[in-house]
Image (tube, rainbow, N blue to C red; front, side, top):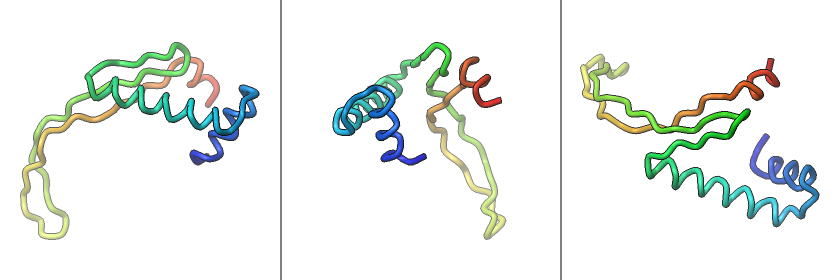
Length: 90
């Protein structure tokens, strides 16, 4: 499912126009992004939890040259599915 299909599904499921569904989706994505950038967790009961985890610096190997390289530390977004979502998938 791509963004356009998701907007159509939201519009149909909520009984709203596609324009309103697009605005709602964009506002949701923006809010989640801003909260994660601030280091917050977003917990949607039954659906899942978005959080930020830190990956420490480490050494790796360049597969082309086989040289050892240093990989910098970074923060990354993480999602853990909730029980209702997990049950719906299985």
